[in-house]
Length: 282
Image: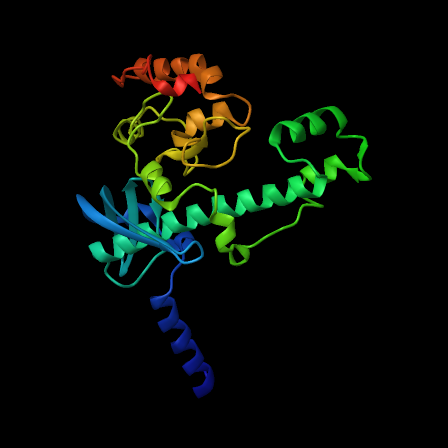
């Protein structure tokens, strides 16, 4: 028999379970589409650390899924991302706020990676990627200035930073927030020319990736040996980004991009290869 105290704990636990749920608890066969919409909205992104604010009109497509008394916001465009479960019925303002937070998080993560790379170069007293690559591939087993490059590459001796460590100076001579938003809300890959609409169409029956990545454009450095800058960064699909890696310049990647474009056309997507794009001159 339950005591008064244990019955209160049981009741409280039952109430909390009704208010809080994890995605792992969902029976996806019972999830319903509560709303789907596509419209133009105005994004306002404020990066307090760089002291920059950007406003931009973009077309977004989103879904709101419902499971019992819970909701999930799903952005389909400009990139695919799901929110956590919420017991509050979302509206368009919630969706815009969610999109803004996701974009800012991506921007800060790129800035953080850039800060870590610079610290890595400084530690090795080398100031460019090409020198680091040569040192790593040809001397990774040996000691370089008393340091083991293998350990450095694995990050064991690499200074770790957090988002909170970013300062205004880390955004100087770096990809601007305005250019970043332009890239992440761009509709076509600079290399194979696939669009977000094409990707969503292929996702119905002709995409094999099991990752969440792939449903949005990503930021790519045309010349991987150069820095993240407005001039050196373009919108790139997940597949071209993976294939290009940090090895190929844009001009070297042209024939590979042509092959990826052919695969999309073979799968039924009518997209033209941009033969005379100025990007191939980089």
